Length: 210
Figure 1 (cartoon, rainbow, N blue to C red):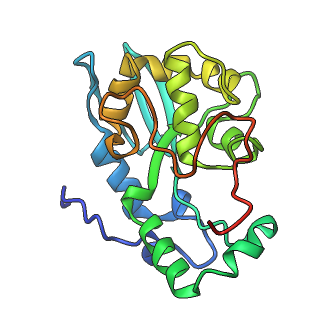
Figure 2: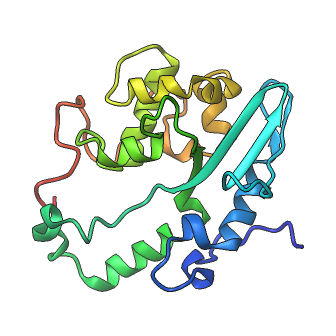
């Protein structure tokens, strides 16, 4: 089996029609396993397996036990009615190109998948929270605030998975581990937001094409 990562591989190409690559693409699963099975900032190996029947990826060691699943971090919002008046102004060819980019490995990450206290996972929480609306830049800001003990719309959810975030020691450790450097400023103290950001009181989605 090749250990090479094709950064242009479209995971929909090996996913059954109508299904989600997060669950059904064997190549995405293999890439996640290859990319994230590596030493943590504390020096311990974060080796992942895909043989458990209870989850997508699994790690168990003296560090703890973690069940992890894939989550897409890039979206066109082309199916959201609230965004229809904006999306309709964008050529479909441009949307298709962007969707294709989002369907490659740079458009995915892993999060803990096991519910804690029967409450929502990170994947679910960031998707339905109206202050996040599945935007990964806003999710990353919540994660940054988690490490600095600041409140955010995802505070309760992220705190439930503090054992996972503790693996990376701090925000820079998390960013470097998951290769998210392009999404933060050089000093790791702030996020490169996709839209101007003042606070989470602002709408998560734009109201015009500008």
